[in-house]
Length: 425
Image 1: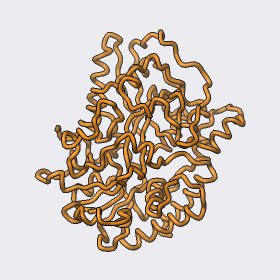
Image 2: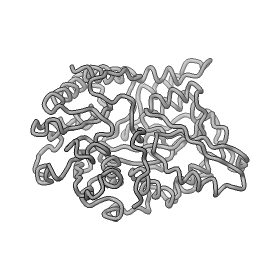
Image 3: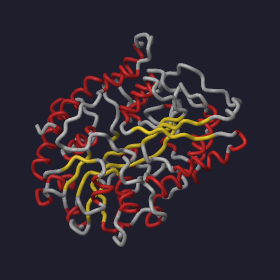
């Protein structure tokens, strides 16, 4: 495995600007994002659009998103002399693949340029304001409906994306959040569980607990606990700890309960709200236990441990029944794309099984949902045996809980709860 070239001073894929537990930062809620998504001169939304926003997609409520234009023709020529504009999280896509794409289409004299964002709200706001005009964008399902009804995305031409059907799990060929995959293809998949240092916390302790989420509240590890500085992730973790699988609940009592539990956690363990707490700080033995995306703990083991430290020092717990938090990120083509045919070629290039696996193995640590990946074969080829539970398998998308979009009124409840957490209650 090649040493990972991530610059330590830069923010990684999920790094947000809010880093410390003591500083309360106002985040734009759903209403603000929707306002940002409204184009100048755009008329009021239709009743269908309002219903979509008020009742976002769920696994038991699949949504077919409206079409506002036709996909480009399969015969659309590849743009010559174009610079393909990619808009993505920082350090989430292997730069070497940009060069390989340029080489593949060298006869068209194309280049690839990357612009990054540090949080999805800011990324969407810049897109809607016209501050960026990308050809390919990387959001997640929670933002999809808002982007579509604001006419910020164009439908995909399936004939130009044969690698999806050829290479990817069937779950993503007709996903509940985008029936008929009109606008999206998958990029990565991940779970949210508990990462821990096995040299301080034995596997047996985690495995013997009736509710392993509770280890985050254990005062024995005071000063050694990290949780995500992300309102929906951390609130979801508290909901899951209390047996609430609906991590998109709009029940004010449950949201308030989750808020109180997070405050109790911070009080009991002096837990720090971080984004790099697992993939950097746990690797450095600063933190011993924390909430973790599967890709973060894999990246910690492969790229961030000090020289001479074995990857098996790290462990990961995820519910054995697959009933924890599950998620995925997307690739879409904005309606403002200047090179839509080249954008389709790039998306299909990233759906190639060799390129997709190389991006996972050599760069970001986040698994891709490809048929050619035998999850059990990832251990130990890519993922250390101690992190076997970080492997994502298709059944999790039937049994897991997605963090998804909520209505503006519910989003306001989460924002208020998070503000209270950041302010210390």
